[in-house]
View 1: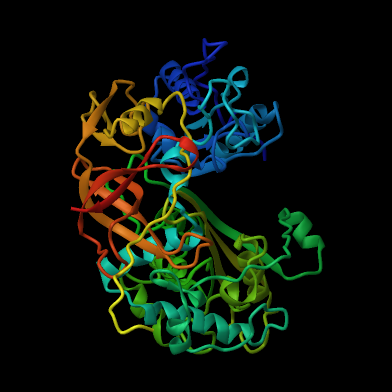
View 2 (view 1 turned 90 degrees about the vertical axis):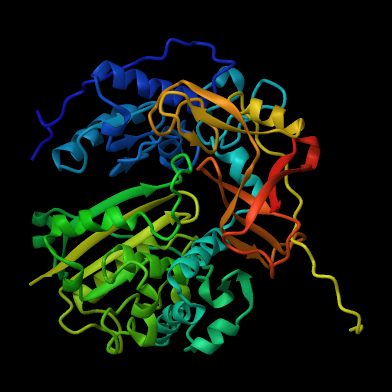
Length: 397
Length: 140
């Protein structure tokens, strides 16, 4: 296995400016992108892979993907190794292309150290020009309005309720199911079983989300080791085979046709299912990111476990409780009850899926014959810009 | 508790000074004059938000500032109930008549009366620290 001969560099462009008092750092990134696209003879919308490092303003690649309007990106990489990042990116892009994860990858670098902007790591570096800054392009138009995870996910829930008739009681069932699982987890931050009534009568945090619609805040962490088949064979642990993976950003992209009722899972999910050669109905256990109850509901719809807009009915009446419902989810108690280390729940989603596939989940929540599982998450905010990721895993006998 | 009915409290919050870049300075200069600008691409004809030099739809650099009446409808919102020193306030998106949706705060409205689909119009609220005023939206 090698990348040798599997990918080509077809566009390259060096920005002509050496002093850029009148051009923002995002604009420099865009002009570099346009220059390389013109050189290659490609259009913006041909790009389906985006690579950047710490000089790119914003959150990983997501602010620049949104700014540039890269609507077809299905592979992202913001590996940071300083000045060598972009050479690393060429190698990573070749790997991604060799695997079919993308066909045309864009790598950009830009900054304005002469004008105080674009320093890696400095999100809002002061510009040399008085009163001007050079941070993420959306900052001036978004950060001033008091957006938080609570109220930007609240905006999604409010719209979902308006459009599909989803109710607070239906959302509450997601927390209820998580609490039924957490009671068996001795490490869970919250172990009490709660009722729908208790969830909807907990205090309002950000309408329509109540306190119990929100995940816990916990310290801690996790780790995962992925190996080659040869290494896996040499080890004594049960084998969890990775069958497919998909990823996608979602952002307002200029604000036309804004729709906050779906997430990037509508793209990352099918990519993972297609690669694995399985369907949502085949999944025995699902780890679904649960920063808030609405996060779970939207992602269950977007992954294809039910029709769009039917998530409320799907999650109600214990349908997510192991041993009771059709789709056992987050059997560790998830972010809603167990753990959300450093406000990032992705790794605990993978870890509980591994426990289920190994048959090592708590006996009270272990899914019988659990041979196929999904771990799915979104990061950032469903209400502004986020990255969606899906992995499908199989137990190998 | 007095028996006289309390007037419903309208939503509000202090807004920090916005980050202004060389690319967005014309927007904020106009805001100081009470004018609400959006960007439109003369190549594809579409308006976008937030304002960029290059069109996020067709990548053309032929974008122009356009004065907008700042009218539209509430696409969605959430009311933040617990925020140190500033609760409650409403954040949400307005879909402008020109097409793009804009993240903002809603003012001059109560939690009970704010609704999806409500017609709203831009107004400018002074920001902290002497920065340019920020666009917020109030019921028409």
